[in-house]
Image (tube, rainbow, N blue to C red; front, side, top):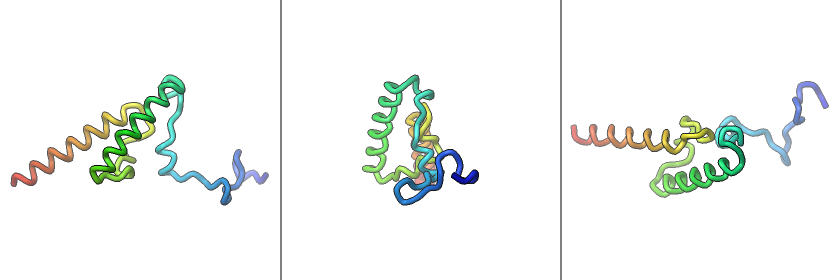
Length: 93
């Protein structure tokens, strides 16, 4: 293994390099008090994201809100509510 290849070697077709965007979806068990917490978070996040997609909001719209960290749904909901308030304000003008 070449020193520049890092701990895991060179990405190839069978094991491609993970993009910065993909890393934003990965969670750490330490952030959620273990695997049960991770499982609950992932189920809730997936339900939320499916509903958002059904409403026309792509998953990528939430990347800036740290979708891999605790509190994601709260942050996303607050952002959506702020956007709705701004929309109503501008629609009233």
